[in-house]
Length: 97
Figure: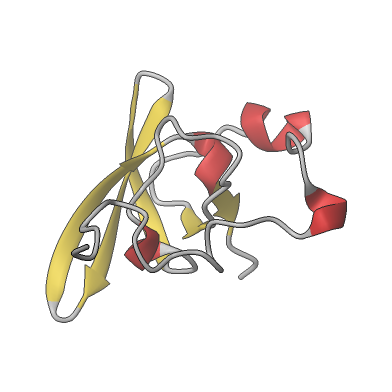
């Protein structure tokens, strides 16, 4: 049987929670509002499928450009190109800088 070419292929360790952290995340992370220019870290929460960015961007630092509905448009530079990613706040975390 051929290998799958799906969205979550090869991301078993990234899209998995530790046993003690299973379930929904704290509500404060959902209610956090970001301003334009804020630095955020893309940390995918595997328990929420909606608004999930591609696993290749997990752990990357990006800058918030705008808010679009409940989601945020973030920009990051990867391999010399500017990438635009739309992610919901469940998958973003403030960057400590």
